[in-house]
Image (cartoon, rainbow, N blue to C red; front, side, top):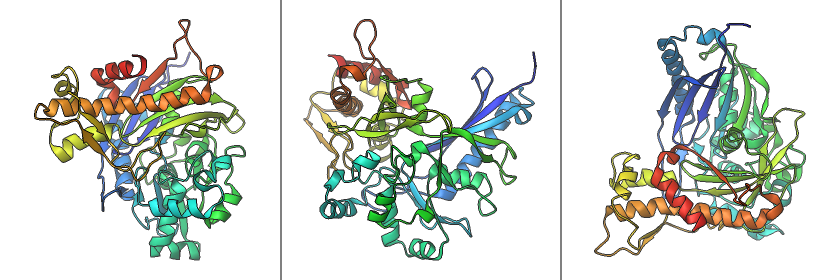
Length: 448
């Protein structure tokens, strides 16, 4: 038996931070590094990222994780690294110049709500209204999805218009931007996306797994600027010498919520909830696309190889979960670090009649109200910051309950797997799951 040390690496590019983790052959983490990056808020409802800062954060994470693994005694980690995979924040949209390699505007983040007027215009003009494209892509017209963000860029950014007209523009979500740069950028970079990320653009046909020509024609988007769609598990290309890990193949790519579903081993009828910046609940529906009638999304779960079967999912997307805790920290100063919220909320037995709705940029599933805004009600002279902290935690749980109630109605008894006690088990992950109080409140909200 070979004594060769074998490792794989994982890029995790999220909404507020980037991370690189190195695993050994036993799936044990032997080195990791995480870097937060700037959140840009040009005006109310707008959220942007600097694509170049994201690139730099990923490069730093790779270098530091390698250094940490080496310092901990894994001397052959670079030689033993066989492949890397990539997971990323979904829907976040950017356009860049293929000749210069530079972004033509900041990345417009998935929770950004600037496209509200474009959504309303399309709803009025198209025969199917808000659900006009649901049959092809499973998604309603919403500020959430990449196609609407791309339309805004085409209509409002002169550099983007010019680059599209001259054939110099490339469109992509964050996975596409990273892979293009990792594989050479202007010098032969590979312009691809995977089926999970493509399914969140509103432009991919869920059945054919190709860009939907009818949708592109309706929206006036050129297929020439779109990346090639590949599966979630195949060799995409090798990392070039501009990066650490030169020559290592990129062998997998999934949007973050789809990666969590694979990590939780969710088979048909099984669901997971990820608590991050937002919260995202996905139920694997197997090889069947279930069209929701209760405000959920029909989406792709994963396709683990070019010839592998395609699994689909019902998804409930919640825009603000952990981001509300960041708001308490950064905007109100009620806590100094996110980890403090559990201790603060535990100082009271309940929220004291305070309820918080974190609709900072509207409400996603199952309501789809981009005109909604946040509200905190029930405040009295009795209210203190512990009540508000607890109400913020409860708001995450109540939103997840709304989604799961819709999911149960859509999937029905035959669409869910239950244990021997007849219970539907929800797998949970994400940074906020270290908060025991949050998880206890979630159980209470779901089952009592």
